[in-house]
Image 1 (cartoon, one colour):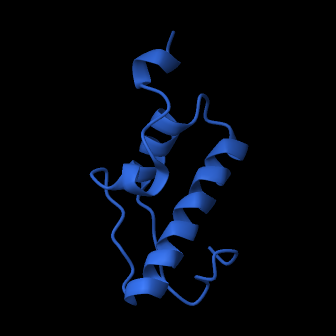
Image 2: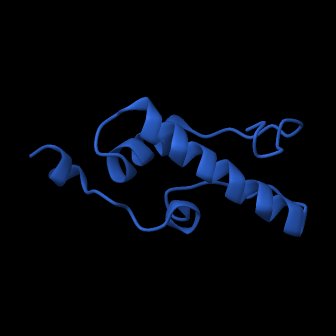
Amino acid sequence: QKEAGLHLKNITISDEIIDSIISNYTYEAGIRDLERYIKKLFYKVARIFIETNKIPEITHTNLDKFLGLPRYLKSECTK
């Protein structure tokens, strides 16, 4: 959050969104990939905040707008 310049703003990511990132964007629940996607998310939120002066809400519906299309499906990860 601080790296994206958002240290003065209160931004939270719900546990459900974290679970969705783990399930759909990382092959395993490794910290490195998860950290990379969370940073990407904060950078995009920071850009939107600079452009609109509003912090966007992060939901399951708009997660792909921040992170792109999901890389994995839950069924692929359990094989």
